[in-house]
Image (cartoon, one colour):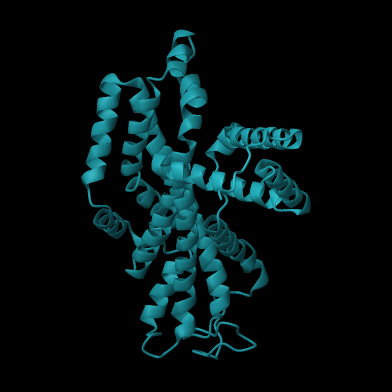
Length: 354
C-alpha cells in the first residue's frame, strides 16, 4: 500500500516569512553591491597584514621620534668598552664605550628622515614628469618620456656609488645623500603614472572639464590626481623602502652621510670595530633588525595598497567584503530569535503529511 502525501497550500505565516526572507536578502545584496563613496574607496581593506604593517611602522617611528629624548648622549665615550647588555646599558656598549641604545635611537631618526625626504622628492619628480607630460601630450610628452627612459636604463646603485664617491666627504650630508637617492629612483614610477594618466585623460568627465574651459592645472588637480592617489601612495611607500635600504648600503660601504647618524652608519662602525668577530651581537643586530622590521611594515602596507590599484586584487577584496557581510548576516540569523523564525518557516513549508 502506497502512502500518499497530500500537497497543501502554504500557510499565511510561511508566505510572510518567505517574503521577509526575500526582502532581507535583497537588502543585504543591495548593501554589498553598494560601492564605498568618498575617500573610502581609495583606502585599503583593514586586514591583519595591514594592521601588522601599521603597528610596525608606528612602533619604529615612535622609537625614532621619542627615543632621542629618553636616552643620553650617543657620542659619550666611557671606559666600559664592548660590554654586554646589562641594567646600566640595555643594549650594551661599543668598542669605545658608547651606549648602543642611544646610538640606535638617533640612528633610527636619521634613517626615517632620509626615507621621508627621498619618498617625497621621488614622488614629486615622478608625478611631474609622468602626469604633466602625459596630460599635455605632443612634444612635451615625448621629451619627458625620453628623459624618463634615459634614467630608467641607467643602473641605479652604481650611479649612486659613483656620485657619492665624487662628492667630498665634508659636503656629503644627509640632504646630499637624499637628493642623490631621489634623483636616481623616480623614473620607473614616472612611467607607471604616465600610462595611468593617458588612460584617464580620455575619459568623459576629463573631456567635459576641458570643453568647459577649465585650466589645465585645475583639470589635473581635480579630475585626474584624485584617481591616482592609490598609485602615488604605493610609489611613496616603495620609495621610502628603497631609500632606507639604499642609504644603509651606501653607509655600509663608507659613502653615507658624514655629519649624521643612521642605521647604516651603525652597521659601518660595527664592521670596522670587528663586532662580528668579537661576538658583540648587540652592536650590529639591533640596527639590522630595525631595518628589517621597518621594511617589512612598509611592504605590508604597500601590499594592502596594491589591492586598491590592482583590478584582480580589487575583485578579491570585494569578494572578501561580501563574505564578511554574509558571516555577519548568518550570525544575526543564528541568534535565539533567528533560530525560532527559521524553525517556524521550515515547519510551515513542510505542511501536513499523512
